[in-house]
Each structure stands twice: as structure tokens, then as C-alpha cells.
Image 1 (cartoon, helix red, strand yellow):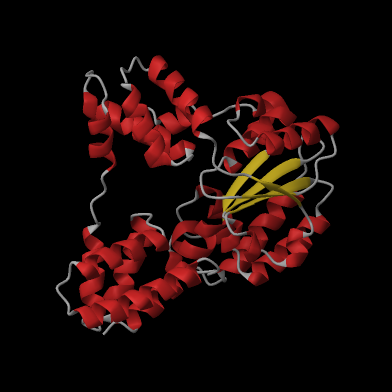
Image 2 (cartoon, one colour; image 1 turned 135 degrees about the horizontal axis):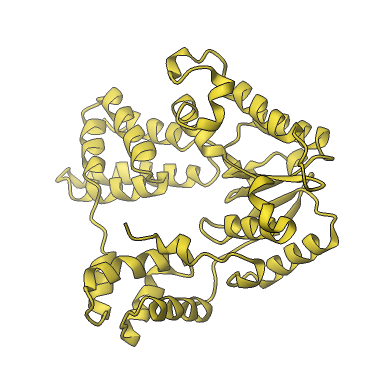
Amino acid sequence: MQDLWTLKYRAGTLEEMLGNEHSVTTLFELAQSGTLPHLILYGPENSGKTTASLALARQIYGSTWENNFVYFNASDFFDQGKRYLVRDKRFVRFLGTDDPKKIYKSVIDIFKEIINEYAGMASIDADYKLIYIDNAESLSPDAQHALRRIMEKYSATCRFILSTTKPSKLIAPLRSRGLQIFFTYIPDSLLKAHLERIACAENLQFSEDAFDAVLYFAKGNVATAVQTLQLVSLRAQDAVITEELVYEATMKGRDETVDELLYAALAGDFFRGRQLIDDMIIEKGLSGIEILEGLSEALIDSGENDVDIARLIVKISETDARLVNAANERIQLEKLISIFS
């Protein structure tokens, strides 16, 4: 099986990070000072927050970094809930079962219990450990208040790094507990040089226009650019990779589940609509924005009359606006399909 290039060519140290020079320098200086505070890393998806945190752990702990770095994804806890918890082997001793129907504690109680235990265990070979919580905007307000108290209680044994794309979703007391550091997408000049290094390492032949096409599609997103490069390399089969091959590889067809969702919503079948939303979010990993974009396209192609299409496009746009500050995408999507028919 071929390695994922996003992992194979991921920066391993702070010095190898692409872009975000000020933020990376700040992390390096904090690591060198020995006085690392709690951190809140914010910025768009795939802008380097997790990569920087892993590199920071290596900078602080060296070869023992894996013993002192714990990763949790808040969206797994609070969007997928008990179905996710039973799949993660770390949580077996907290749950006592692998059947989500037999878990009687609430997700927030389980979350507090897990974070309390991990935070309370002192590091064997370091002054403190790092607990990284990704997608922190998915934490409910109650969970955030609980986390704030845990951060205060265990400041001697651990430091928390919260990563979020929506810092406004974090309560003010939680934001005040951490140093906020911004990450964003990188300039095309840096990204192109990175792609050229990968192409050279993988013995790929790229036309200049092909690189430009990848950059146009990625828009500064390193993960998207590297994934596209790997996808195109599989299609090229040792041939020269051209601009046309890149555009063929990046053309996305609409997920057929979106069409099913539209028909269910128009028919007033709310139960079926909820099932399809769960399938797209949990099983296929689509974001709320992606689902709305697909619904908009499917609606325009549906053959409905222009008045109904216009009315429903307005509803989709209103939901799109609410998703910017929504704590739970599923609730907003369910509200949308409930008013379609």
C-alpha cells in the first residue's frame, strides 16, 4: 500500500514548517524558554495547526515526545458521540463495554472523566505533558467550562493546546486561559517549492502549467495540494503530468447521497433525511458547507419550478450563514430539510 504523501512529507520539526513564520517562531521561542503556557491555535482547516503542535512536542521532548503528547478530537466526542467512543481502544476502561447502547453516562461526563485522568497523570521524564484537543469549537459550553476548570487544576502536570477554526465558539474564560496564535494558508511561492521537492523525490515529470493548476485548486492549502499531487501521479502512470490531467483529477462530481437527501426533503420524509445527513457527515466525512453546496446544485438540476427553486435557495443560503457560527452542523441541516416540503 502506498503511503499517504500528506503524512510522508509532513513537517517533522518547527524548522521544516511552511509559512506562518511569526507563529512558528513564537512556538519555537516558547519551547526554548521552558515556560510554555496553554495555547489556542486558530485558523482555517489544514493551515498547519496540528502539524505545528506535533513539531512543538518533538522540540520539547525529543525522542520521548509520543509518551508526553495526547491527541483528542472534540468533534469525534460531541458530533459522533458514543458510537465513536466504543471504537477508540483508549476509552475501553472508562466505558466497560463496546456497545454504545449500554453506555448510560452522558458524553460530557465521559469527556470530563477522560480529560481529568489524562491531565492528572504526571509525565515520567518531563515537567509536564501536552494534551492537544482538535476541533475545540465542537465542545459544548458545559464541556468548555469543565475544561477551563481542569486546565486550572492541573497546570502543574500538563499544558493544553486547543485547535479551532472558529475561535468565537470558545467561551471567553477558556480563551483567556491560553495564548492565541493564528495560522493561515501559505503563499503559492512556498507551496510550489514544496510540491517541486515532492515531485523530485517521487520521480514525477510535471509541466509548469500542471503545477500552476494544482496551486489554483489548492489555494494555499498544503494538504489539498499534496493530496492532489498524489492523486494525479496515480492517474499519470509514469507519463508527463499536464494541466489537463490535474483538472480531470480535481473535477468533483456531486455525491449521489445529496440527491437522495433532496428528494427526501422535498417529499417531507424527515426521518430518511436525518439518516442521509448522518451518513454524509459521519461515514463520508462531508462538511456542512459541502452538503449545502451539493444541495444547491441538485436543486437547480431537479426540474422544480423556478419560484420553488428560488425560495429554497434562499433557505440554503440562510443555513450557510448560520453554519459560520453553528455549534452543531447537523442541527442546522436538519432544520433546513424540515422546511423544504
